[in-house]
Length: 317
Image 1 (tube, rainbow, N blue to C red):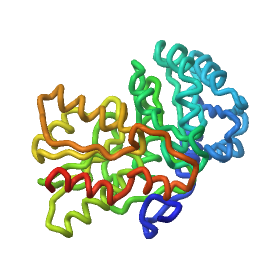
Image 2 (image 1 turned 135 degrees about the vertical axis):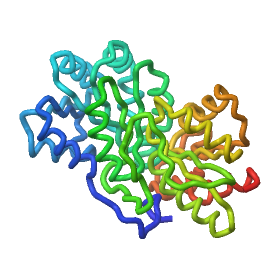
Image 3 (image 1 turned 180 degrees about the horizontal axis):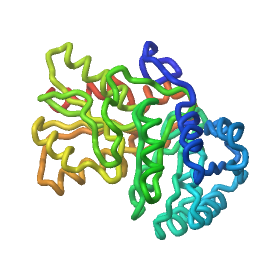
Image 4 (image 1 turned 180 degrees about the vertical axis):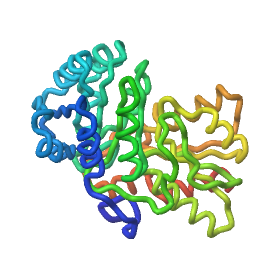
């Protein structure tokens, strides 16, 4: 498998987030950019070079960066805080909880290199960040599917009043030909393709693989829906329950532990809604991974088109 986790013929865009943030800031003077010594890897070099007076590099001090962002938000700034997902969640969690989520301040936390998209090994692999952020009251959790949706999400979270955790792959990201087509609305799941035999709920990069899995199953005469769950909190529980009840078979796909992320959120929504489809999860099992290329890691730990197809087949699809 190649170093990427999507098909080699999928078009891509470089630094979609970095360009979108600069564009937003040009029209929104209250936007400020905060970093933690990862300027290039978080695409904020574009902001630094374009708007240096509104760029603040706090250094390797993520907890301090969050505290500073909280103070700036209280004075009317709109701070975007950037670091790797693992540091944005585990390392600064107490500050995020007490200084941002509890007072419901308008701070945007941008976490890059989620799950197994980093070759940096266990220390850099955020496989539990969705679970941590979902557990925080007042926190909105967003993971766009592709470059087009990243740009839309930047505007949407800027317009949203309250703390947001935005989870992104850095650098080169796919542009899905059959990807997001609708206006980005926080809390609204997006049906990318309909089907009657099963539904795949996917988030982030796994949407690419879910669409490929549905196409493969279609070639075998199966009809599988794909839903892009770009907002994990608040989850679109009504859409989840409606599509699950109609198909009777559910697969969730996420670049995250199977504990506490998308699969857990969907299962909880189905239970609360009184919907009881057959269900399988595709994600990282209850294990730490290792250091290697993203393509290798996705294949080894079961985050692949083949794994999604196999999960559908185990449901009788």
